[in-house]
Amino acid sequence: MEVQDREKTFDDEIVRLNQKSRKQQIAEQEKAEEDAKKNHDFVQFTRNGLLKLSRLKNGLAVNIFLYLAKEMDFEAKIIISQETMAEIFEVSRMSISTAIKELVKNELVQIIKTGNASIYCLNAYVVWNTYKTNLELAKFKAVVVVSKKEQAKIKTTRMKQLSLLEKEKKTN
Image 1: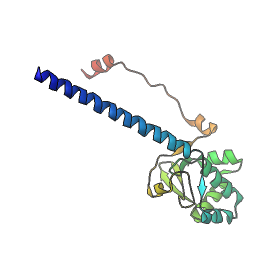
Image 2: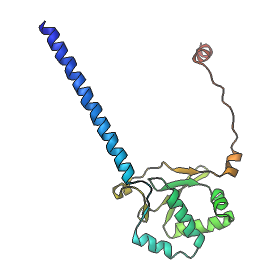
Image 3: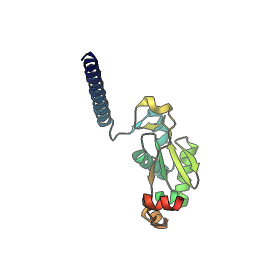
Image 4: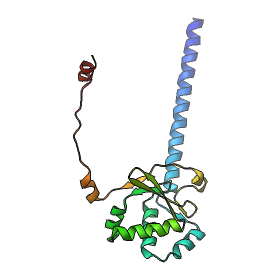
């Protein structure tokens, strides 16, 4: 009888710990959701950043920066081609290239190349949309913007789906 009592006590303790753990998970999730609501749909600028932006001579550069700031993710990064930007702003790709060069020269944007794509990293000391304490992080998730014209270039191929039985037959 004594062994059964200990086992029951042990089982009860496991149930209690699981319930406590689940309550903690729920509380953490609710806090994360609350924080997300507090920090939803905003972009912040430093005064110095606004001053740099206002001194740009190329109005297209200002518009591109504002567009990138509006579309950026929480790490202030976005992948978008110059071709797509040209389509959005209804200008030539050369005009976009000139404007981007001005943004880079004025340290408002940094470009990181990854294959044929460019990751536009907005200067986090100019504009951000997350907690200021996260500025030191170097994450590279990004928002990717692809125009309809560019999507037409992507060939869609249907992949053959194999069942597990077919896979087993092929490996044996």
